[in-house]
Length: 387
Ligand code: PHB
Image 1 (cartoon, rainbow, N blue to C red):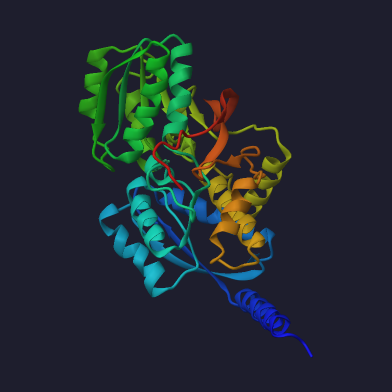
Image 2: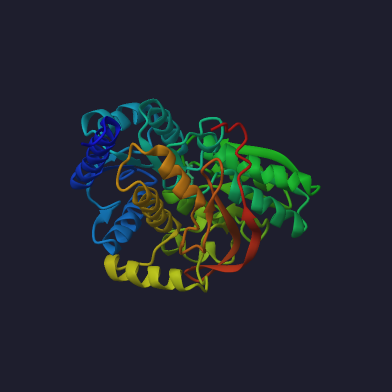
C-alpha cells in the first residue's frame, strides 16, 4: 500500500498537471491599449501590426495558448486612462496588458498593473518612472526610456562642437525626460542648455517658440516630438528659415514613420534612436520583408517595439507554460534572455528596460540611415527602482 505522503504527492502532481493543462486550453486574453486616434494614431497601428506579425510567425499561439485580443483606443488621453485600463482588467478580464504610446497614459497603466498584479508589457511609452520608482516584477518595456535617446544625443551634440543649445518639446513626461537625458550628457561634456521651451501636448502652434529660437541664436536645437506633431514641427522649422541656420538634433521619433509627410524638410536631420534603416542584420532583413508583405509598407521603430513586445511575452510565457500567474518564472526568463530583435540583439536590465545600442541616424531621402552607433549598450539608470 502506498504511504500517505506518496499518495498526497501523486494527487498534488496530478492537480498541478491539470492546472497547467487547463491554463493551456484557455485562450490567452491580450488587452491592447493603444492610441488609434489623435496625433499618435499611426504609432498605435504600427505597434499592433508588429505584435500580430510575431504572433502569425508563432501560428497564433503564445505559451501554448491561442491568443484572443481585446482592444481599447486610449486616445493618448491621460484623463481617461484609468477608466480605459479598467475596461481591460475588470470588464474583459485580460491575462496580459500591452500598451501604450503616451507616457502619461502608461503611468496609469503601470499603477493598475501593479495594483492588480496583471502582466504589463509597454511597447513604446518611455516614462522613466515605470522602470524607476514604479518598477515591478510584472512590468516590462520592449522599447526605451525617454532618457536613453536624449542622453545619446547629448553626447553627439557636444562632440559636434555645440556649446549653447535651446530645447523645445511638449510639456509632459516624454518631452521633459528626453530633454533631461540630453541635458545630463550635454552638460557633463561641457555644453550648456540656455533655454528650455515647451508647449502643451498635443498642441502644434510652434511659431512663437520658433521666433524665440531665432532670436536666441543657439549653436543647435534639441527636440522631442513624435507622430503628427513631429511632421508639423519639421515643416515649420524649415519654413521659419531655421533649417539651414541652426542644426536641429532630435530623439529619432521626430523622423520615424514621418518621412513621407515631411519630404525635403527632413533631409539631412541627425537623430538618435535604437532602430534605423540599413542595419545589416539578418533578423531585420527577414522582419522587413515579412512586414512589407503583410502590410504593404516598411516598418518603423514602433512596429519593431510591437514585434519585440510579443517576443518578450512569448519568452516569459513559454517558460511558465502559459501560466500568467507564475510571475517570478516569467520575469526570470525575460531578464535572462537575449532578444533577437530587428534592432539588433538586446537584453532586459534589472529594472525591466532594454539595454541597447543607440544609433546615430541621418535622414537621406526616405530613410533614417544608420551612420554609426552613438552609445553602445546603453542602460537606463533605473533610478529609484526597487524590485
Ligand atoms: C511617450 O509619451 O513616452 C512617447 C510618445 C511617442 C514617442 C516616444 C515617446 O514617439
